[in-house]
Length: 580
Image (tube, rainbow, N blue to C red; front, side, top):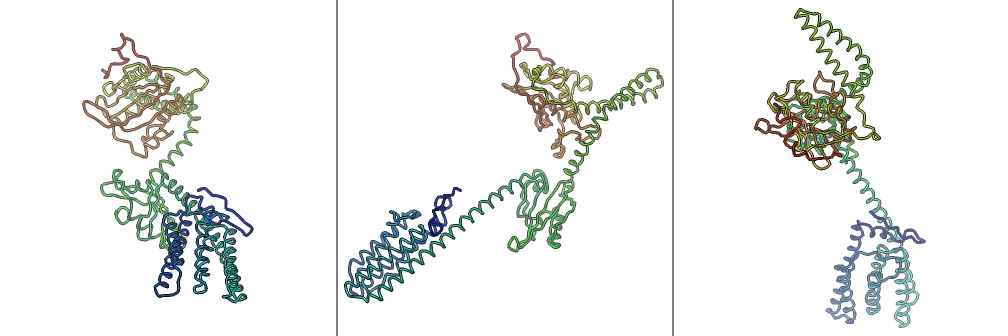
């Protein structure tokens, strides 16, 4: 809201509404303007009715009085209907003449023509008030002075005609003029106070509205649920996180309007009533049990408001936290701190572990008893698993961004992905489950070959854990558009839990106890180091003639160079599709 500087005079603020009429909010000024216009119109009707009545009852009367009253009524009606609210300014300008000057002229004319029969002196208070409220203090005092001079002039004219007592008439005119000056001063000061208070109120309302919008945005984006409930259990406000936590199913995220509506919300209602009864906040772990759904453990903290701050109404604010989120967050923090220590320990474990594996291999060569060989085989498998965990930890520490000063490394995406898929499927006996779908044209991307292999192997290992045994249940696809390419790894399997999906790419976070939780984190680090990105979503693919929904990880490459295959290579691919 723009503010115009208010005019000032030697008696304080000279233009009380000058700042208001230059803003977008002129409702108060318009109401005052309409009030004055209504008063002028009403006074015009009264004057015309009075003149007509006096003529009708036979009182000596001049037709000029009816003409002046009729002209004044027409002027006030035109101004009231078509005139726009305007500030009269600080001087006798055309706006002053059109409003205040017209009133003064009309009342003075009526007073002169009417003589001593009717006293129109009180009517001059209206133009003085009009100049005081809609104009500056200087204009108001000038208007009062002009009206006083007219009264003194009228008294002098009456004295020359010998129709009044000079002393009494002059004293009355002077006293009336003093009253007009007092009215002008007081009305202007009151108008100035009203104007300044209005501007302060608008400023406060703007600040309150801004703060309310900020609070709403903050509450809407909070990961924790927030409910505002009254004493009757009616929900005044609920953010999306609270609706998601309390909804009977993820598909039924209706508004939470009344805690009495669902039996599962009864623990929240009881906790709210207890907070109101005791007058202070409560904390409790509650369980939400919807029919046909598993239990949801929620940590609830309540804060009752002070009823004196809300006009006697009490409200209770409930903060809801998903216990699974809290536990996952604590577990992630613990695992992250342990990971920093395990990186150092991994270096120390690597050498003894290599010695154990070598000694076990030498021992197995000299054994002939099948039971002993079975034991050495178990030792070898677990040693290999430990070695893989150590490698994951060390790889996470080494997954640093690529040095921008080095020459970018280029790799043929189709050939590299096909080679990795062949090796991985042979090693894990997944030739039938894995299907490779390369792009028809060659794709060259900026990525180090070994890093690309580590990313794809991690994604394939992750897909193998959750994919079914159906042929084609794991699919690897490359796709390209100008200046962009995508590597997709899809597997047919159930959707991930939301709490797991939120932490997919965090270090040391895994839904399986046998996993180090570093595979996807390493993938993200390697992709970011090559200006690529990795993400996850659910998608539908065709498997054995049926559309099946599954989990898909995709790596998005930028700054690629495409070349069409040669004529003799157009019908050859790095790997037949599907795999034999």
